[in-house]
Length: 432
Image 1 (cartoon, rainbow, N blue to C red):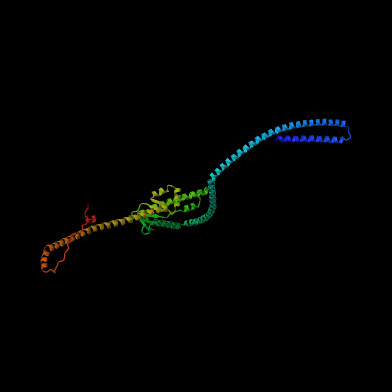
Image 2: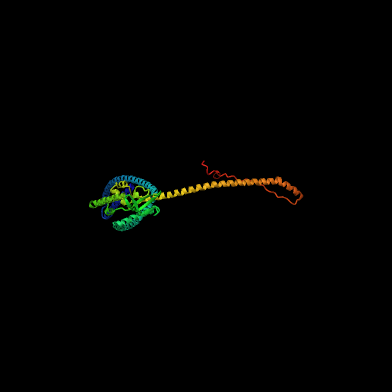
């Protein structure tokens, strides 16, 4: 930067001096035609002096300007040095930032490479979430349809339940329903009518004549009576009131349930007074009170937990469909075991009889063997006598007539096989 400033200053000073010299020459030319030479010389010297003074002034101005320019140049050089330092710092910072950026890029690349499986898993998860969301929407739609269908079914069920409750308010209808449920349970247990049980059998006892709904026959000639008449009008009326009802409705439901328990206790007393078991042969001293619905038993026990013990004390067994089915299934199994026991006894008797006859047959076989053995001995004796006594005489006759030759008569050396089987050698009458 400094040489450029010097060139500019020198060029400016040369132009200024040249302009002054040209101006003086033109002035001398314009006045040289009419002036005195001495005057011209004096003027010329004066002008030269003026020119020197002007030149000196110009040089002084130029020197001052040069000093100012040099000072400015020094200041500019210092600024340029500072700027160069700043530029170097900037370049160093840029280089460091570039290196750091490269390191960050490499680190990010490694992180991205490491996160690639995670990204794939996220994509797969996002796809599954989308699929699940689609399935959820479909299931929500299906659930809505099912809820609508359930609501319609519930309405139909409510209507049917109301119709059934209205029908069951009739005593005859309740009796038919209880007998039908009893027959279904008996058939499900595998019992056969008129073989394993009888329906509407008349019973006479000290308590009077009675007619239980069913008499179940047990193995060994035993019997047990089953009654299916249960009052539950109060229960039907109470079931129409929600369990969560409060106030007057809740109090009414509680009162109806107490009436239901009271009616059931009265029925237990009635069955206990009939004493069906006294009119049956070898019957357990109890009567089964069949209750056609599980809810009838559970609601009564909930309202009065002591009702089961009360029934046991009266020799009455409260049986729901599940309980009665279990009892009757046990009876059916007992009948099967009884039949199997009888068949097994018959098979044992037949096998014992067969075993005795086989032993008797062994005696006959032994006698036959001894007879065959005597026949073999007699045959062998015959053959020996023939060979020792008869044939020698026959040979003498053969010498007279050689055309007659007696054939060989084989002997029997084998004896009958002895009986070795334990069953055929043991005396059936022996007690050892």
